[in-house]
Amino acid sequence: MTAAPLTEPSQETTPPPDPRLWNEDLAPAKERRWKVYDIFALWMSDVHNLGNYTFAAGLFVLGLSAWQVFTALLFGFVIIYFGMNLMGRIGQRTGVPFPVVARISFGTFGANLPALIRAIIAIFWYGIQTYLASVAITLLVLAIDPGLKPWTEHGFLGLHALGWICFIALWAVQALILTRGMESVRKFQDWCGPAIWVVMIALAVWILAAGDWNISFTSSPKQLSTGEQIRQWFGAAGLILATYGTLMLNFCDFSRFAPDQKTVKRGNFWGLPINSTAFALLSVVVTAGSMQVFGEAITDPAELLAKVDNTAVLVIGALTFAVATMGVNIVANFVSPAYDLANIWPKRITFTIGGMISAVAALCVLPWKLYSSPAVVNYFLGGLGAFLGPLFGIMIVDYYLIRRGKVDVAQLFVDGGIYPRVNPRALVTFFPTAALSAVIALVPYFAPAAPYSWFIGTASSAALYYVVSRKHR
Image (cartoon, rainbow, N blue to C red):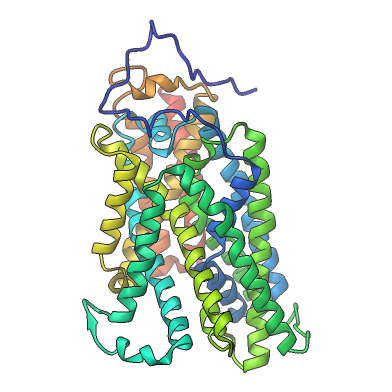
C-alpha cells in the first residue's frame, strides 16, 4: 500500500518556505471544493470544442466507419482515464500544482524545465485555439448579417477588421475569467461544458431529420483495406493520447482541489470514457449526416451551422461555440502557464499575473500567422509536444516506484532541503528520450510510428529513469 505523504512535517525540522519557491498560489490548496461534477464538467469543457469535433469527423472522412471511430477513441480515452488518475492522485494528495509536483523528480529549481515546456506549448495553443474559434464566430456573424462583408476586405497584421473584433472579444473574456482565480474557473466550466451539448444535440437532430433518420454506422465515405483500417484505428487511439498528453501532465493543477481520490476517479470516469467518446460519436454522426444531406462531408460544425436559415439559431450557435472555446482554452491552455510562470518567480508572479503574461504573449505571437505556417505547427509545437511523454514518464515512475508515494510537501518549498536543486538523473533521462520522441514525431521516415510518439516517449523515459534511479540508490 502506498504510504501517505508527509504534508504537515514538524516545524522544528522544516525551515520556513523560501520566497524564491513559495507563494500563496503554489502552496498546498487550503480549500477542496471540487466535487465529482466539477471534474466531469472540466472534461466537458476540454472535450467540447471545434478541434476535437474536427478530429473525430476527420477520422470518418479518412475511411473509418462511425463504429470504428467510436471504439478507437473509447480505447484511447480509457488509457487517458488511467493516466489522469495517476497524476490526479499526486495532485490530490499533495495539494500542489504541476510545477511544484515536478520538483519532486526534477529538483526544486530543475522543475522550471518541465514547467517552461508546458507553459510555452499552452501559450501558443491558447492563441491558436482563440483564433480558430474567432474564425468560426466570424463565419456565423457574416451569416447573420451579410452587410458586414466589407469589414473583411481590409486587414492589419494579417487579420481583417471583423476577425480582429471577434478574436479580441474572445481573448478579453477569457482573460477576465482567469484574473478572478481558480474558483471562478470552476464556476465557469461547470456550465460552459454542457452548453455545447445542447447545440450539438440540436444539430444532430436537425441533420438526422434532414437525412430521413437513416445514417449508417458501418459505412464510410472512403473504402479501406482491412490492414489500413487497423492501422488507422490504432493511429486514432495514439493521436488522441498525444492530444491529451498535455493536460495529463498537469492534471494535478485541478485534482489538488478535490477532497479525496474517489472524487477524482468518478469525475474522470464520467468525463473521459463516457462523455468524450459520446461527443466523438455524435461528431461523426453529424458529419455522416452532412454527407448524405449536402453531398459532402462537412467537418466544421460552424460551417454546417451557417447553413441553417434561422437567425436565432445562428446567434445561439455563435455564442455557444465562443463559450465552448473559452472553456477548453481556460482548462487546457490558461491555468497551466499561470502556475508555471508563477513558479519561475514566485515573489513577483502570482497565478493572476502569470495568466495575464500568458494571455498577452499569446496575442503578441499573432497566432493566425503561426497557424498558417505548417512548419511552425508541425515542427515547433509538434516537437515540443513530443517532450510531454518523457516528462510524464519520469514524474510517474519517480513518485510511484522510486519514492513509493512518500513526499514531504513542506520540503518542496525549501532550498537546500531533502530535495536537490536539480536532479541530474531526471535530466539524463529526459534529454535522450525527448530527442527520441521528437524524431519519431517529426522525421518523415518514421511517419508510420508518429501517432505513437507520446506513448514511446513515456515508456522509454519511464524505463530509463527507473534503471538510472535504482542504480544510484
